[in-house]
Image (cartoon, rainbow, N blue to C red; front, side):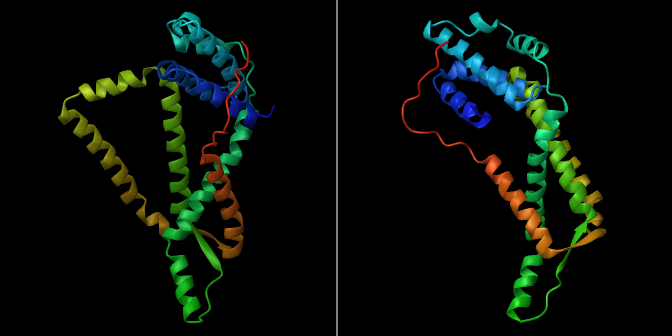
Length: 242
């Protein structure tokens, strides 16, 4: 069974859980995904956890009777007893990172106005420059967005079991404090944009437009496919015996 097939099977099994049990299982899987374990290892572990959860659910037992009251401690014990893949996990993440870079490359091309200039040049039968500039601003901003997104995912995973507590504490804050936090975040983002505004005029290299598109379009398409949710197949799901 391939990793994709196992993931689809696990998704089908997860749909059989009650909303409460599904939430706890989701927290455990999210926590495991940001650990040193690879996605393939997590899916194998996830299948075992789902079998245990569904067995407990069929006996009308809470998942705490199987995994204990501290789900994070249970996951930490699993992580400690599974040999990590090391660099293999990082290497497997490279295609997705390249896909994200291709996605931002297409956005950069669209927002630059280059396409509009090409259309006007074609309309007036004028010659269009075949080279496209790669600026320092595009490279740095793309890397910053990717690092921030990765950091947010890591934070969400590491604090998966405490997310609800954080949200409740945030909602319990006075409106003035919440407004102040939002203002500080907005000012930080605005300050970064203002400080790096001139970087878009610093050209690192010129690349042939067709080469640029030949690289960016396939990478962008791959990234979009990664984001595309898997379709649920019709027909009843047969649960694997525990």
